[in-house]
Amino acid sequence: MTWNTNFGKRVLEGSEAKFYLHILQAAVEFSQEAVEFDDVEVITGDRIFDSASFEQRVVLWHRCLEALLKPEVPVPPLTNVLEAAAYFPFAWLTQRVEDEIAFADCIKQDGDPFYWRRLIWETLNALGMLKVLEAEFEEEEDILPIEVDCEDSLEWENCIDELADRIFWDRDWQVTYNHPELLDGIEEEFANQTGISEDYVQNRLPKVTQSEADAALQKILDWQ
Picture 1 (cartoon, rainbow, N blue to C red):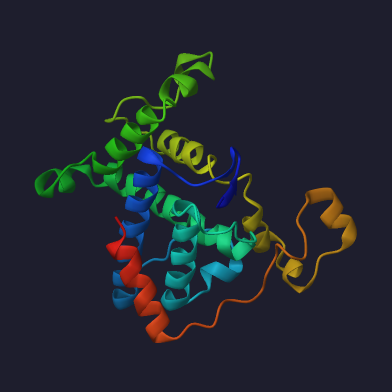
Picture 2: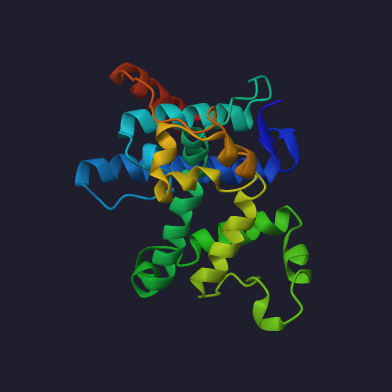
């Protein structure tokens, strides 16, 4: 038992596990470089996680990776911070696809201009989701992209959301941006209406030593 997903308590397996590990490892490496160059941050929508240091994020990412990929790890109590950490690679991937489309001419000279879109397409195909996605829409213009060279970033964002939705019930962690007052306490009426509880909304980040962060980072990058 591990993560409480839309498909029940489960670990990611096969192509889905490979996909998540790949985008998380890439996102972590990107984030490490972003710290050095003061680059643009990836936003998850949770005020607390988005304000975390790289060291705190690495420890949280490692917790998510263990919970999502190791069946012997108990189901973690889900919080806004932990779910935002688990969602981070999907948000990061959305930006990479946007860059891939916007800077296609530059990428053609250095590598595969469809690298991330191909990864998404292959994962959707391996999970048998392409036909399902196609069947959900009646009008041709509303069909999600099934061609790797599709240049509509919004359509690809929908595809990424479809993959994320296999893990997350909803986007509860993003409520902290629009309603920061929830970090100071949740009224019972609000909890009853939304299902968002005091236990879920956290306003603290883990205390992390440099050695803990270094160990977590190495474990993430070495994970196969």
